[in-house]
Length: 356
View (cartoon, rainbow, N blue to C red):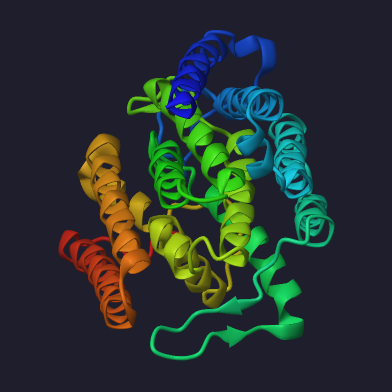
């Protein structure tokens, strides 16, 4: 119960700090000015991620101080402080880097190098990596020497796909809330506080931010929020998978509204010869907005999809091999069907199938 109280406090602090930042446009900047590839229409500050990261960090420090000073059992359960330190340190490092990028702009090469540096800290410094991939009904696939590159790829992809998908009011904040709550719930039992409590606190911070970010948004998350949050979840996925808290499919299903959309869009743009780091409006959620759904209707539909995926992940988590195979098949069918529906709707509306 104490962790829920702290999470509520984190949410309240995030709500206050986000509102303060939204009203101090000239203090920190930067401002997101609309252009022909934007979905918003008015200049909007994009510093909301500062409130999320600062609030979550404050909550983690309070929780850690309580655990280390008052409760021997919790002290023992916080025994993975080196790993948690690399995770939190990498998150804060990327928050600072991304804030600088938001203000001054960094080259693609510099950004990637710094993202890789943070990922190497978690993998090599914290020893957090994915050693095997489960296959329902079969023996787990041991990665062996490939564990390091695969783990780095997971971290780098989660870091950047969150940034790719932060393009609509309330979208990334909603995924952070639902994804964080789901991971906290799935790991709430046993010695998993290094995963469950930070995930819960991040969900609380996202809740406070969402009050100001829900359509029509007064403030955006910005790279200072999306980059470190994606990195944080990537590290949590690796840590939870390594320690047997859940199989790798569980968080992939939870975050599949982001993972599937971003992956399919990037692959399609690569095949079309486009520069994937440049701004565009080709994601499926963006295409729904362009079809006339609007921000609020689209984001509410995405929330429904997120909750559905969280439920699928739970069934996979508690199921036997037969249920897990059924869940994976249903998961594939649902996303294949949804993508096909968007394409058919564009054709019916007379739009070009892939909006560049």
